[in-house]
Length: 155
Image (cartoon, rainbow, N blue to C red; front, side, top):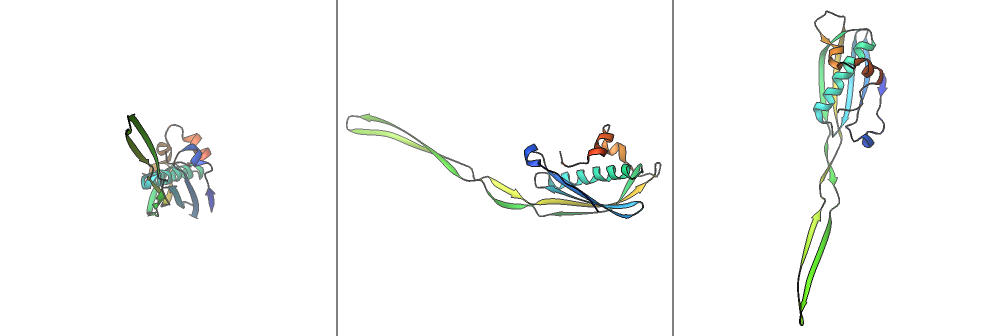
């Protein structure tokens, strides 16, 4: 089983994703993709599909067919950002009296989500003209560059 991992996705501010590929036989593979909560299930699917195209080309085929698919999510609320406040006070002294006001503004308390989305694909690798999904078309005009470097972000 071959693993493809991502390092430093938080620095890039892009949704991280990683995939593993397991050969079943000469022309069938299983791809398992895990994507962080920023990607969503659609992002995990997108990465898995691109990995299917990449592996099709790497293994000497032109087309592929999805034989089966499975999804899973364990994304959940894991906390909130800290709540803090800012108070401004203004006042005026008139004789022996002080007149004024205070205004407090609260910030934070935004939700923080954790967990991941996963997408599994069973993929049959097919020769050209078999009626499957064209791997190069799936990856687009820069398919050669993509095949060399993998897909590690859902963006």
